[in-house]
Length: 84
Image (tube, rainbow, N blue to C red; front, side):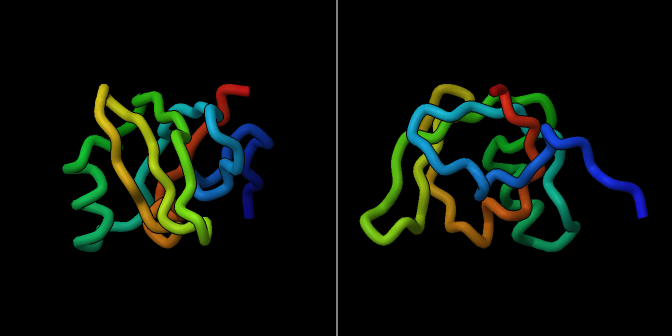
């Protein structure tokens, strides 16, 4: 099994407000994955963590000039490359 480069991770792994990343892929081909892509989470887009709900879920992000909130289970489907 091939290993992923250290810079590749999942969107739900970003833990600090202000962290930025570039979307590599949305994993899966079910309705949730399709909906995430329809909401603008597509390859090459920059995404930034804006805030966390009091219990840590959902998380608010900025992408394409608007705000979006995703549950951790949804963010786990988005493969990213960390900008750090």
